[in-house]
Length: 106
Image (spheres, one colour):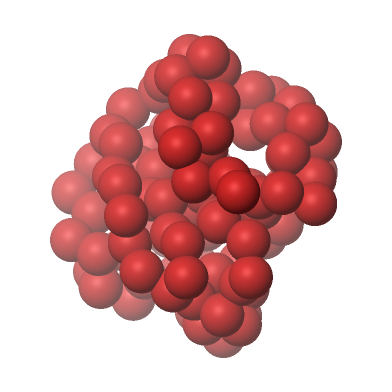
């Protein structure tokens, strides 16, 4: 229940989204990124219709990582109304990510 976002689709899927969007900046070689992937899929299902969970592969889309000064992955960016509201670095437990989303879900 996550969506793959690229440099070409970022503006439409994230910045122009009517729902809050949690963006996971990750890479295939990143162990902690793979570790939180199932949690993000679960949250995508649980928050369907209320928030979106998006994934950006930083190796394939480096401009997004540069734009938001991402220095380590996984980095999670929470956007609402086209604005970056919060940034979290590192693998987080499900309850922490749900709490983050809950602060922005109407």
